[in-house]
Amino acid sequence: MKTARIIAALAFAALAVSGCTSDTTSDREKAQAVSGDQQRKYDKAVPFPSADLNYPLDRANLSEYLRRNNDRNRISYVYLLSMDAKVIAYYTIKGKVTSVSSQLLPQDDMQHPCSVSECWLTTDSAGDDGTYGGNEPGVFFFTTSGALVTWTGDYIQSDRPLDVKTPVSLVAKVGD
Image (cartoon, rainbow, N blue to C red; front, top):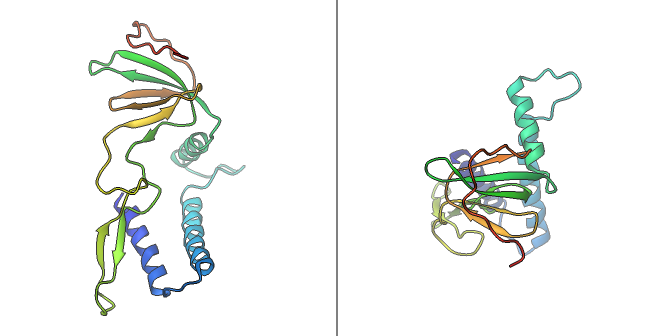
């Protein structure tokens, strides 16, 4: 998380140092160049295994995890757990489970309140919804029928249905 903030701050600083201009195309190209550099760093840090498989097993596992989690058509099975670890609900979902606290935009803004080049101020930026402050805790996902489910407890996600031996206590009626 701290690394992401530092990278976002450096990206913002790089754009700020390059000067403000009314040419939004130029600004957009600069932002895409920074984004492209970041993607190349990700690709170098966790490359997909090649045919020779000279990567440590952890790297291969992370690559496979990322590949599966970024498949928007992936079908998974989510089991919501009570505080005593009993399955209280079961869903078939499309896509992935996502944190409610996930944010697409940088979490910090860099401001330059004075004319000294070392004078930068970091402030919280607005969330993706345009508001300030944290989100409620939890995760969310979309069922295969399109329902949005938000959950604040523990869960298990699997690529295959699991053989649950205890009765499921919360059952949602589909279509009502």
